[in-house]
Length: 343
Image 1 (cartoon, rainbow, N blue to C red):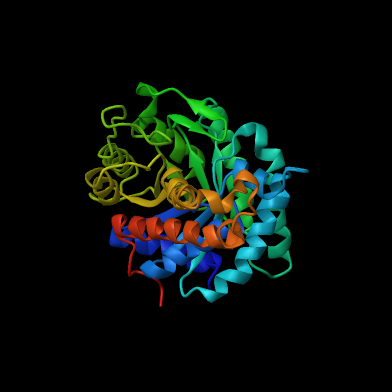
Image 2: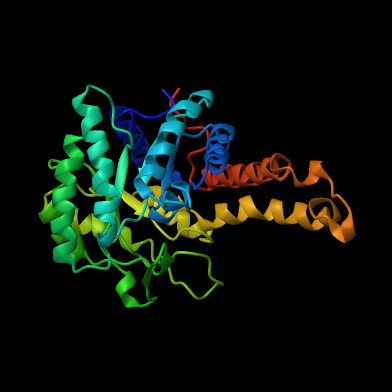
């Protein structure tokens, strides 16, 4: 069972929450980066999440048509086959989808899973993300309510982002300012609209100063302790016991975060952390090193013929896979998911 069933995905998330660890959610853009992610999880003996953004799906769809749904479906189907060779359980997820891309990405993908479930099969993806952070909270939650109902029927978990994450992700840009901090009132309005699980399970990307990309120290002020305030506020309002964690939190913009910031986030209910920038670099750096070291082999310099063994994509591709896999192993260690795979 390498690709999680809906029941197993829920079990994965419950185990993470109870054990105060989080699953790395690794963005992939090709069959090769998929294998790198799967290899990293297997080497760390960690279950995990593989995700495809709108830009990643467009790239996967090929530059001739750039069809996001085709790209996402194709890689998901591929993952269902090749993941069987890895002794870990993987959930498939789609990353940031803003309002103007819902009809070209998430809604059609939910429809694919609806048809699969009607036929007695499992959904193609285990979760989808709706990024309404650029909308008013009222409009954001109205769309989230509609999507959550459909997701629940298709045995899918919805991820919502209720307030902005700074920086840029696939063309969606937010300034780095005080709006990057979710308030208890924001959390209350979210629960009033989406419930606490009775309307369907959802993951919550709350903002505590998160910024996409990597920035030099001092440019980003993370406050992961804010997540405790959100949980406490909701627990108090809805009569839950002290120490309850009503939300399943997601850590966006996590590349470059300190060990202390990650540890605080885990203690306060983060069960999923996105990684893209760091894994992109880990994939590309070995390729750059190979090209510099074998310049006269990968290029036909001064009329020479070069060296096929050095420009063969399999040569430098293996290095790229190994580099990215190692970064995934590191992430599993940082997030305490290493060694926790479902047996």
